Image (cartoon, rainbow over all chains, first blue to last red; front, top):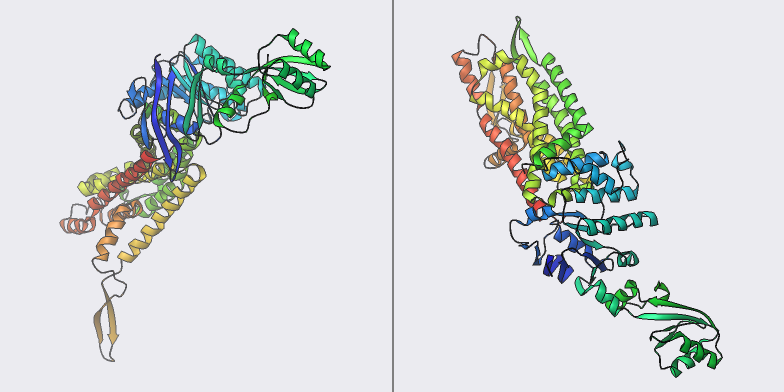
Length: 311
Length: 293
């Protein structure tokens, strides 16, 4: 598989503490790579290094086949766009003026794509409104539009939905999917909202304490994620007896709720419950969430299955 | 760099602060053109250096650092990140410093060109390498100040950068004036003693006189201070106002006196250039190693 970015054993030290401790990752071309990690795990530091804002203490990376120690690395970075932490723009300019300025910075001869970009991010109607007066969502979208100037084929988005309302989150998600599907832009996206990320990402990189714990494709993750059935019953003690009789893997959540992890026939289950005199109130199929998978992976406190996605 | 410099210029010209300050400089220049050149018997014969100094102090300490600090906020608002994705740090720093210097050079031109044009006859007659050096110091003074401000603003975010600019420039101004006063003490004091019948003059060593090698060190520091250099250049203009008029400028004796007074003006120019290069170098060295957030 062709990769756009390959990170090789990068370490970053701030004074005595290591923010990155030998991180390695591979971003396939055309993917939406979800970069998942706790606060302070090193996501933003890694993104800053990729964008050339910081230098690694050790290790290197290869972007479009150019090693980070090569002189051409800053030229090749022109093929990428980035929004790192907070969107960057001139607050005393309008959305259009900001895009024109970015076109000038990149040395682009024409300003042809500006209208299309403004339409794409939904800022075509902002007129003479200065960017300082934009809402948080508009600022975020302007940041993405600036990152898209010059038609990059690799987009780096650091927490792009932070602080956005649900409507804004959906808009940004749809925009990223559109860019990936229609323009074939590879996207590296870090987010704390794992539920949101799971609706986008085709690949995941889980980072913990400055190291990649696991890199996995969304397909593989789906295979590995445990599916379960959530039951609400009159008495979980009776349910436990029925589950043992069926030789199934189960977990009691509360006095009336339990999870069954083995795939089994609903008819058999209801019959077994009936035989134990247990009344079944509801039944729903769930899948282990990205959040739970991540927490299990890094060895944190296991989250309650209530957070699971309902199917 | 080829694309970055015009983009920086575009950004500066877009800023209302920059446009207002340029207008302010032009008005100041017209005012200086009215006030500075002294006319004797209907002919323009001199330039008032003290007015030049006053204008420079006001413009340099107040306008240039404030405008530079207000405009060079790309580190604070994060726009520097957009530039660093695609350009080297050297290109980004150079484009910022050169744009700031170009702006302040334009300020210098707007402020000091009108009085110089008005006193063109005098300058033409007094023109030599050293007069050119003095004029160059006058023109380079604001760019030197601007490069210092850029170097600070490229490394310190927000309000802290602006405050440090003003504090450092204030320090340079007042430090420079103090140093000039210290170095101006004569080596000997002339005491006159009256013994009842006659007055006797005796030369006594001045305790405030700064001896070598400290004098050399302070002179060197003084030359590296753009405010001191400016002071020397404006003193040169004062010299013109005292000695150089249409009839006497070619007088041989006065020329000799002029030569004596002009001693060191090229060193002063060198000092301003060194200050600019040094501050740009230090600012760049920090910026190159800086972790951008």
